[in-house]
Structure formats: structure tokens, C-alpha cells
Length: 395
Image (cartoon, rainbow, N blue to C red; front, top):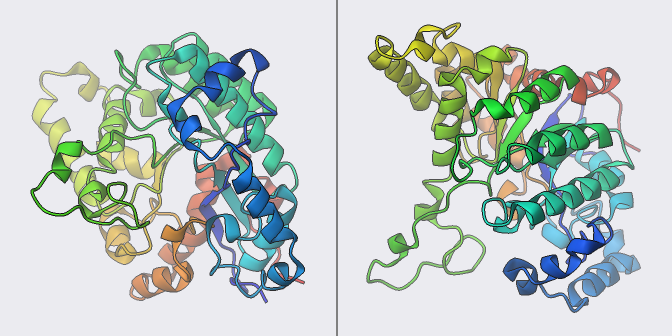
């Protein structure tokens, strides 16, 4: 019996849990030595023990026998289909989601290379995209994301074109600005044009933002253990600035006319929360009103910024957020369901948490949250027959 029954629910955020050798077969060999020397790669257990343990666990008949019953209880590498592509279709059948937009985990952020080593950054991005397409090749319901660094004006459009041609269903760009220029720079117009022509979205994901200044951890008190048990990765304070980069980047894209020049292009802010969206939309309108007399770019906007947001931006609330309030104040066009499978943050029963929050939300708005807004976001990236398929029970 699937987790979701008798309804169409598209999952706007799920993940591949990469093993430490994840890019080895996809990276151009001439970059292998430089890649192996990266601090983040060195920090991984590259001795093969992680892969060996994970594979042994999933080869164990007794462990596999519990996969169905624990589809949302087992997390990270223990989850069915978290790293083995042939197991992922069964995992999706058990979850009951109609499709999944898939991101990586450890490769998010592209190893911090984008500004400091553009040549290697584009090589690892290419390897990431090849790996993602390979993982998603086993099932049409899997919608892989292709990463495109924005650090180089010449390389970025080439990377975007290659990602689209190899079959990526969304282009992932960093939330923070590249060093030395805005993400709204006109040199990136070819990227937006390619995505719009292909009918696929531009997406942002947590991991590509400016991180909290570590000075905030120095409060004279014992370090707070984070959500995952560490000391400074994910706490209540470091949670707060997660959307700051994407708020500014999206504002630049709107004010500088990118949304208007490409009115059919959709953008998605994934796993960046959504409680910030209503106030941010109001703030966009306030900024436009305050500066419109002196800024020709604002005078040329096709509509109020908040209306442009409703037209072209989609976001995923966290399950702990009040989604009903967000929809009521941002508009029913904006929010998307997401599970974050198989990450711990997604919880054990995301559907219930979202349903509870939507208890007083009109049925039509709830339907848009679970289904229609995702279809709108993904465009041609989601095959027509996968958008609203005939409901049936999983085997």
C-alpha cells in the first residue's frame, strides 16, 4: 500500500545520496587529480568503507525485507533507492508520488569551486549532470536537475546547453551572486532563452546560498548541537539566513527585467522555506514604488513585482511552516509540496503535516499545492502523460 493513495501528488524536492565515488565515472579524467585534492572530497571517507557498508546493508535479505514498511522511517543511506538507481522506482511506487524532482546531496554547492576555480567548477558540474541523468534514466518519473555555475560568461551558456541536451529537466543555479557580477547580468540571457525554449525551469536549492557568518556562533556559551548532531551546521540561528541570498537574487532578476524578458520561464526556490515569501513580495512592491521615479528599469516592468512573482515563481515550504497562511498571503499559485526524501529534514509523515496546515485552505488551492503548481513549474520537463495520470494502486 503506497504512502499516498487516490490522489496526484508531485514531489518538488527529493535527493540522491551520493557515495564517495559518485563522480569518478563521469568526471573528465584530466581533472581527477585536482578533484581528489579538494578539501571536501578529502573529508569524505574515500577508503570505500561507506560504499561497502551501504551496499552490504542493502544486499542483506533481512534488511531489504523491511524496506516497504519503513519507506519513510529509514533515512539517508538506509532508505530504499537513496543511492541505487534500480531501487528508486520501487521507492517511488511505495511513496505514491506521481513524479520526483531530484537533487544531489553532497554535491550541492559544487564543492565551493565556482568563484575560485571556474575551470574545475564547470568540470565537476558536468560530471554532476552526467551522474544525475544516469541515475534518473531508470524511470521517466524521475526529473533530474543539472547544475550550471554562473561564474563565467562563456562557460555558463555552454554548460546550460549541454545539461539540456543530455536530458536534465531543470537547471539548478546558485542562490548567491557569483563573484564580480550579478546573476541578472545580460550575459546570461542565452541561458534563460534556452530554458524557456526547452520549457524547463530555473531552480535554486538550499546549499547554494551565503552561509551564516561564523561569528554568530561565538556567544560565550557552549556550542549548540545541531539538527544532525554536529556543532555548527544547522541550528536555529543558522536557519534564519537560508533564504536571504535567494531573496536578493530573485529581486535582481525581477527588477533587472529577466522575468519580463522571458515571461514563460518559471523559477523554483526549493528547500529554502516559504514563510519569508509574503513579506518579501510586499517588500518588492514597496521598493518598486519607492524607486520607480528614478529607475527606468522599474518603469518598464510589466506588472507589480508581486504579480510577476505569482506568474513565474514557485517555492517549497518546509513541513513545519504554516502553509495555509503562506498561501493565503502569497497566493495559491506559489507553493509546492515536497518530501525531501530521503533526508531526515523531510520527516516521517510530511503529507499529514501539510494537510493539517491546509485544513482551512480552499480545496482548489490545496490541489494546486500538491499537483498543479508543480506541473506549471516543470513545463515540458514533465511529460504530458505524467502530469495527471489515471489513479491506480501500487502493486
